Image (tube, rainbow, N blue to C red; front, side):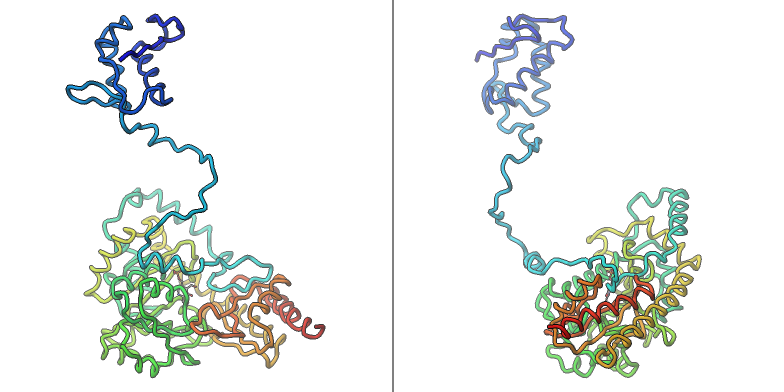
Length: 497
Ligand SMILES: Cc1ncc(COP(=O)(O)O)c(C=O)c1O
């Protein structure tokens, strides 16, 4: 075939060997440009190197050099005995990400999601609780009170001490000194019965529950859970295709006698015994013992989610269910999100010895491990006594805010408010008897700069008139004003319809 190439700066086509671009490069550029512009089409045959060299009156080696370069970059391909061709698939076409010339097509791609994918695609998106002037959102500790300067110092020291935190860790169960520190902390402060080897460090409670569910539940199997109960756990169970068996709660926590009537017998029971989420009930001792006995007899595992058990105001923190009996069939789950800060997103699960290796495999498959730097800094925070010092300070702070909230609610709502779960944790529940929907009550609050949330999202049946109020991020004066404003906003439209 004919291929007429004009060489650099010379429309006449004669060779310019004294130009700054070497000849082989000039040939390379021109062939490449013609391929990319479409003048040379995929699969089109190129002249043999000898023929092209003769027509350009240059050495064959120069042409071979250009061809070799184009071959190695994938613009050309050779077929033995047939010659050199423009590649059928061009590299530039594959590599170039050009800006779309049209808006994205409104037609959705045909995606074949798994049952898990379909299940989570159908759930409503996770809503972050908005900022508000009087913010009674729950689940967030008082970040402003965290000893950030100290944390930064520890981070810097750990970073400087070595670079071991930059690599993969060898143990997916977690950083060994942290597992030792957490085992010791749980033994002395939560009466958990454990050895460091039983601690699995996770990305918070969410990952711990996810791992447990994956390891124990096949789609269609049953999980009993408190109702109302924690939506985060409910969603994991549902996405796994588990059959949910809601069990009612009262002022002593989950009603164990209702649990024992369930058919089929659940494989897992999810409970929050220290501070039932969201009602705040403390699981009574007789029920704890009854639950443990029943689970042992029925080969059922209990997930004990102790998300804020450190905060108990009128008495000492209640020991964990896990430590109540030897060999209790309990997977104890805890988080650092409430006692430290959620962005750290570290938690742990205490697992029976015979399950440790299975958890290690699952952990490695899931996401390898948590950040080693964070784990190392946390280890120092715990072992140097900062965690328990911080907790002591925060207990006083939250207790004072909690009392201010209870007083404000009683002052503003009198006998029309029932307060639940205020002796522990970081939130309480206010039940109001008003002829208004939850949505209207929340809307009127927002109009006066107050954020509160309905308990409804955590209930598997419709319910009305119960609101969760966190008191960690708002000081006593703001609590008083916020509740007053909310109460006024609820009363005024009733007085002047
Ligand atoms: C019952 C319960 N468990 C656990 C958590 C914390 O989960 P995580 O450690 O995944 O942030 C929360 C957060 O609000 C909760 O309400």
